[in-house]
Image (spheres, rainbow, N blue to C red):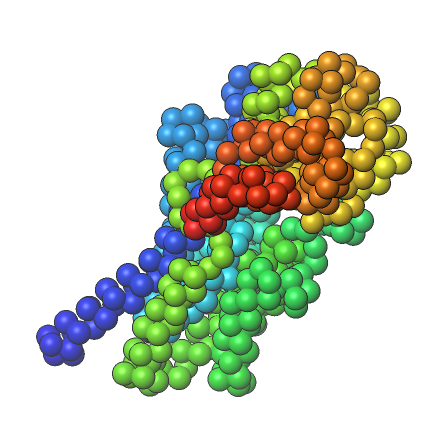
Length: 566
């Protein structure tokens, strides 16, 4: 290749990799918005504070004294140490580094080990980045994704004669102490061993050594405080359909789920099918087995869907690379550059949160818990499933939670069904309140969820705080009776703001009208960035007649400004 063409190739590589990196970083630097990060952080803190692996349930009053088969303690400790040293921004950077490392290892696997043209590698990885970004959060599973890709890279290096396979064993040990997803690594090693049986002639020494490494990798997964329970509990959970029907991330992915969560997955599917067609009868046993494994793992649950793209992209790209003439031509270069550019465009217009090294704004119930602390709300809480992690992170050991996101390691299925539906039925809520002597509720402020509207009209509960994120109700005649009397909303219902404003202000009573306006003003004071609260106050002024037209205009201006900022 002439120096001029070599220079053009280098410039092209720099451009397409820069485009791919920009798309990758847009996703990698998303702010913290996951619900589970909080209980992982608190778990890490308590492991260090107690010097134990927390085998007894510490956080939920509903399960006091129960055994906790926690299996991701290493990641919890690491996340806690990073957050303590560098704040929440440090956690975002850690996640970004793991995401970048995952895609970087895939790039090295495709280009160096599989000899896939750079144009095709960039095209393939543009699809992968889009397909997996929805699951790369500040959680231990992120380490498992990276470790799985690293295991495939080691196997590919061994196949290419460029490195040994034994590093799979220490990789399994490290990964098993970070996340139970390490169990996939010995499965990959066993799959590679199986592929060797299709060679002719069979190299028995290689087959034996590879099988021994696969077995050693499996044993390395047991070298954790959880021991054999890492394997048995994980398989029990995967085989429990009733549990998997309760939590969205554990749903079996349907075509609609895939389209909503990661539509680029269909691009990887198309690439894999095209690769198989181009191979014809020249199918590589390892690639066939790896693709089948990718499908089997990916269809188990929505949370495993990224593993399909991460595992299948290698065989897919290798098959499509058989049309090498196209990928090394100007057309191929254009396709690769276009894929990287389109990937960046989709990243930029995505409705996912904008990059931010910190917490996702207006996501967590921090204002509600500040009210609870400042006003001395007493007693046990029945909290929403999603809010449990933040609640235990913010207030443990002062308060324990009703339920949180440790659904697959702590809570029995029967309780989980109750806890995830407790706010939907008045009878169920009343039963749980009596069962646990709960004194207050922490409920998401989601007016469109009409199944929770009954709480606003239940005399047993009084709304005492409303932000755009969360609502706090206290038992009207319970331990917080004085708070209910002093801070209770009498006229406005959080799930029916418009209707209750119309009723109160349109009642003909000036006293009721002013009381309704004051409650609307209070909602604004409690959350000055609340779009619904300002909109409700604007409506209150509009319903109050010409005397309030200036106040209405001021509130509408604030509503417009808040809308622009979002």
